[in-house]
Length: 231
Ligand SMILES: [Zn+2]
Image 1 (cartoon, rainbow, N blue to C red):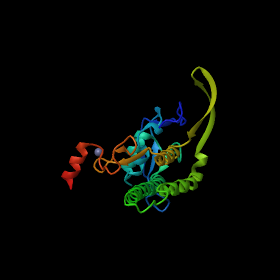
Image 2 (cartoon, rainbow, N blue to C red):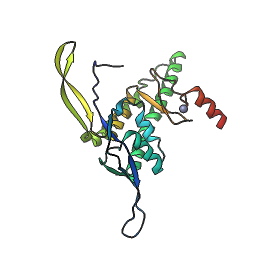
Image 3 (tube, protein in one colour):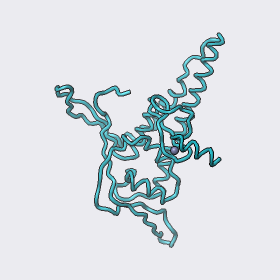
Image 4 (tube, rainbow, N blue to C red):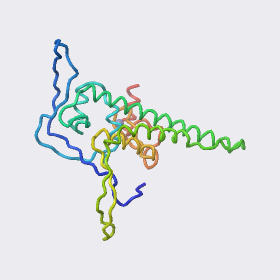
Protein backbone atom coordinates (compact mmCIF):
# COMPACT_ATOMS: atom_id res chain seq x y z
CA UNK A 1 0.00 0.00 0.00
CA UNK A 2 2.86 2.35 -0.75
CA UNK A 3 1.39 5.36 -2.51
CA UNK A 4 4.66 7.25 -2.79
CA UNK A 5 8.09 6.31 -4.05
CA UNK A 6 9.79 7.66 -0.92
CA UNK A 7 9.12 7.41 2.79
CA UNK A 8 7.20 10.48 3.96
CA UNK A 9 7.99 9.71 7.59
CA UNK A 10 11.55 10.65 8.43
CA UNK A 11 12.36 10.10 12.05
CA UNK A 12 15.43 9.27 14.10
CA UNK A 13 15.09 8.78 17.83
CA UNK A 14 17.99 8.45 20.31
CA UNK A 15 18.55 5.52 22.66
CA UNK A 16 21.36 5.97 25.20
CA UNK A 17 23.61 3.14 26.31
CA UNK A 18 21.93 3.06 29.72
CA UNK A 19 19.04 4.40 31.81
CA UNK A 20 18.40 4.19 35.54
CA UNK A 21 15.46 4.32 37.87
CA UNK A 22 15.80 7.13 40.45
CA UNK A 23 13.62 7.02 43.54
CA UNK A 24 13.51 10.17 45.64
CA UNK A 25 11.65 11.58 48.61
CA UNK A 26 9.55 14.74 48.89
CA UNK A 27 10.03 17.42 51.59
CA UNK A 28 7.81 15.51 54.04
CA UNK A 29 9.85 12.32 53.58
CA UNK A 30 7.16 10.79 51.34
CA UNK A 31 8.26 8.69 48.39
CA UNK A 32 7.70 10.49 45.05
CA UNK A 33 7.02 8.83 41.71
CA UNK A 34 10.30 7.32 40.44
CA UNK A 35 12.04 8.92 37.48
CA UNK A 36 13.82 7.26 34.62
CA UNK A 37 16.93 9.14 33.56
CA UNK A 38 19.72 8.78 31.03
CA UNK A 39 22.82 7.28 32.67
CA UNK A 40 24.95 6.21 29.68
CA UNK A 41 26.90 8.56 27.37
CA UNK A 42 26.76 6.57 24.17
CA UNK A 43 23.82 7.20 21.88
CA UNK A 44 22.40 5.29 18.91
CA UNK A 45 19.63 6.41 16.57
CA UNK A 46 16.78 4.35 15.09
CA UNK A 47 13.50 4.97 13.26
CA UNK A 48 10.56 3.97 15.56
CA UNK A 49 8.15 4.11 12.59
CA UNK A 50 9.83 1.03 11.15
CA UNK A 51 9.43 -1.12 14.30
CA UNK A 52 6.26 -3.20 13.70
CA UNK A 53 3.52 -2.31 16.18
CA UNK A 54 5.80 -0.35 18.54
CA UNK A 55 2.84 1.76 19.72
CA UNK A 56 1.02 -1.47 20.66
CA UNK A 57 4.05 -2.72 22.62
CA UNK A 58 4.11 0.56 24.55
CA UNK A 59 0.38 0.55 25.31
CA UNK A 60 0.53 -3.10 26.47
CA UNK A 61 3.24 -2.39 29.10
CA UNK A 62 2.32 -2.92 32.75
CA UNK A 63 2.50 -0.02 35.23
CA UNK A 64 5.54 -1.61 36.86
CA UNK A 65 8.51 0.83 36.86
CA UNK A 66 11.00 -1.95 35.99
CA UNK A 67 8.93 -3.00 32.94
CA UNK A 68 8.76 0.60 31.75
CA UNK A 69 12.52 0.97 32.30
CA UNK A 70 13.09 -2.16 30.15
CA UNK A 71 11.09 -0.63 27.29
CA UNK A 72 12.96 2.68 27.54
CA UNK A 73 16.35 0.91 27.54
CA UNK A 74 15.40 -0.54 24.14
CA UNK A 75 13.43 2.32 22.55
CA UNK A 76 14.43 5.49 24.42
CA UNK A 77 12.47 7.99 26.54
CA UNK A 78 9.06 8.91 25.10
CA UNK A 79 9.76 12.62 24.58
CA UNK A 80 8.26 14.45 27.59
CA UNK A 81 11.82 15.43 28.58
CA UNK A 82 15.09 14.59 26.79
CA UNK A 83 16.98 13.35 29.88
CA UNK A 84 14.59 12.34 32.65
CA UNK A 85 10.89 11.39 32.79
CA UNK A 86 8.64 10.50 35.70
CA UNK A 87 7.14 7.00 35.63
CA UNK A 88 3.72 8.49 36.52
CA UNK A 89 3.82 10.79 33.45
CA UNK A 90 4.77 7.87 31.20
CA UNK A 91 1.88 5.79 32.63
CA UNK A 92 -0.52 8.69 31.97
CA UNK A 93 0.52 8.83 28.27
CA UNK A 94 0.31 5.04 28.04
CA UNK A 95 -3.26 5.06 29.40
CA UNK A 96 -4.37 7.69 26.92
CA UNK A 97 -2.89 5.76 23.99
CA UNK A 98 -4.43 2.47 25.20
CA UNK A 99 -7.85 4.13 25.29
CA UNK A 100 -7.48 5.31 21.70
CA UNK A 101 -6.32 1.87 20.52
CA UNK A 102 -9.31 0.27 22.26
CA UNK A 103 -11.66 2.62 20.39
CA UNK A 104 -9.96 1.64 17.09
CA UNK A 105 -10.31 -2.09 17.88
CA UNK A 106 -13.95 -1.86 18.94
CA UNK A 107 -14.85 0.10 15.84
CA UNK A 108 -13.07 -2.27 13.46
CA UNK A 109 -14.86 -5.19 15.15
CA UNK A 110 -18.20 -3.37 14.91
CA UNK A 111 -17.57 -2.57 11.25
CA UNK A 112 -16.71 -6.22 10.55
CA UNK A 113 -19.97 -7.44 12.13
CA UNK A 114 -21.95 -4.76 10.32
CA UNK A 115 -20.46 -5.87 6.97
CA UNK A 116 -21.43 -9.48 7.73
CA UNK A 117 -25.04 -8.52 8.56
CA UNK A 118 -25.23 -6.27 5.47
CA UNK A 119 -24.03 -9.15 3.26
CA UNK A 120 -26.60 -11.54 4.75
CA UNK A 121 -29.39 -9.02 4.26
CA UNK A 122 -28.50 -8.57 0.59
CA UNK A 123 -28.33 -12.35 0.12
CA UNK A 124 -31.79 -12.67 1.70
CA UNK A 125 -33.09 -9.93 -0.57
CA UNK A 126 -33.85 -7.56 2.33
CA UNK A 127 -31.99 -4.61 0.83
CA UNK A 128 -28.81 -2.71 1.69
CA UNK A 129 -27.79 -1.38 5.12
CA UNK A 130 -26.01 1.60 3.60
CA UNK A 131 -22.50 2.66 4.55
CA UNK A 132 -20.86 -0.11 6.61
CA UNK A 133 -17.64 1.90 6.95
CA UNK A 134 -19.44 4.43 9.16
CA UNK A 135 -17.87 3.25 12.48
CA UNK A 136 -14.35 3.71 11.06
CA UNK A 137 -15.27 7.15 9.72
CA UNK A 138 -16.48 8.18 13.19
CA UNK A 139 -13.11 7.16 14.70
CA UNK A 140 -11.25 9.03 11.96
CA UNK A 141 -13.18 12.16 12.94
CA UNK A 142 -12.38 11.61 16.60
CA UNK A 143 -8.72 11.27 15.67
CA UNK A 144 -8.74 14.65 13.98
CA UNK A 145 -9.76 16.15 17.31
CA UNK A 146 -7.12 14.21 19.30
CA UNK A 147 -4.44 15.00 16.71
CA UNK A 148 -4.73 18.73 17.42
CA UNK A 149 -3.09 18.07 20.77
CA UNK A 150 -0.04 16.49 19.16
CA UNK A 151 0.29 18.77 16.13
CA UNK A 152 3.02 20.84 17.77
CA UNK A 153 5.03 17.61 18.10
CA UNK A 154 4.88 16.93 14.37
CA UNK A 155 6.79 18.97 11.80
CA UNK A 156 6.53 19.02 8.02
CA UNK A 157 9.62 19.95 6.02
CA UNK A 158 10.23 20.40 2.31
CA UNK A 159 13.22 18.36 1.15
CA UNK A 160 14.97 17.83 -2.20
CA UNK A 161 14.36 14.37 -3.60
CA UNK A 162 15.80 12.53 -6.56
CA UNK A 163 13.01 10.98 -8.66
CA UNK A 164 14.42 8.89 -11.50
CA UNK A 165 17.32 11.28 -12.06
CA UNK A 166 15.13 14.39 -11.75
CA UNK A 167 15.55 16.63 -8.74
CA UNK A 168 12.21 17.52 -7.17
CA UNK A 169 11.10 19.13 -3.92
CA UNK A 170 8.87 17.03 -1.72
CA UNK A 171 7.66 17.01 1.87
CA UNK A 172 8.52 14.79 4.81
CA UNK A 173 6.74 14.38 8.15
CA UNK A 174 8.97 14.52 11.23
CA UNK A 175 7.51 13.49 14.57
CA UNK A 176 9.52 15.36 17.22
CA UNK A 177 8.95 12.83 20.00
CA UNK A 178 8.49 9.08 20.35
CA UNK A 179 4.99 9.82 21.66
CA UNK A 180 4.10 11.67 18.44
CA UNK A 181 5.39 8.65 16.48
CA UNK A 182 3.03 6.41 18.52
CA UNK A 183 0.16 8.64 17.43
CA UNK A 184 1.17 8.45 13.78
CA UNK A 185 1.39 4.64 14.05
CA UNK A 186 -2.07 4.53 15.68
CA UNK A 187 -3.55 6.72 12.94
CA UNK A 188 -2.00 4.46 10.30
CA UNK A 189 -4.03 1.57 11.73
CA UNK A 190 -7.15 3.29 10.39
CA UNK A 191 -5.77 2.96 6.86
CA UNK A 192 -5.13 -0.77 7.23
CA UNK A 193 -1.71 -1.13 8.92
CA UNK A 194 -3.27 -2.93 11.85
CA UNK A 195 -1.56 -4.65 14.76
CA UNK A 196 -2.57 -6.77 17.72
CA UNK A 197 -0.57 -7.98 20.74
CA UNK A 198 -0.14 -11.75 21.10
CA UNK A 199 -2.24 -13.08 24.00
CA UNK A 200 0.59 -15.35 25.06
CA UNK A 201 3.92 -13.50 24.57
CA UNK A 202 2.64 -9.92 24.17
CA UNK A 203 4.57 -9.33 20.93
CA UNK A 204 2.64 -7.24 18.34
CA UNK A 205 1.81 -8.89 15.01
CA UNK A 206 0.26 -7.52 11.83
CA UNK A 207 -3.43 -8.33 11.18
CA UNK A 208 -5.87 -7.68 8.34
CA UNK A 209 -4.64 -6.72 4.87
CA UNK A 210 -1.35 -8.56 4.27
CA UNK A 211 -1.27 -9.87 7.85
CA UNK A 212 -2.91 -12.55 9.96
CA UNK A 213 -6.68 -13.06 10.22
CA UNK A 214 -8.20 -10.32 12.41
CA UNK A 215 -9.63 -12.85 14.89
CA UNK A 216 -6.26 -14.56 15.45
CA UNK A 217 -5.16 -14.13 19.07
CA UNK A 218 -1.55 -15.36 19.05
CA UNK A 219 1.52 -14.48 16.94
CA UNK A 220 2.68 -18.03 16.17
CA UNK A 221 1.76 -21.73 16.33
CA UNK A 222 4.08 -22.04 19.35
CA UNK A 223 2.25 -19.29 21.25
CA UNK A 224 -1.14 -20.75 20.28
CA UNK A 225 -0.11 -24.12 21.76
CA UNK A 226 1.33 -22.49 24.89
CA UNK A 227 -1.84 -20.45 25.37
CA UNK A 228 -4.07 -23.53 25.14
CA UNK A 229 -1.81 -25.35 27.66
CA UNK A 230 -2.11 -22.44 30.10
CA UNK A 231 -5.92 -22.23 30.02
ZN1 LIG B 1 3.37 -14.75 20.75
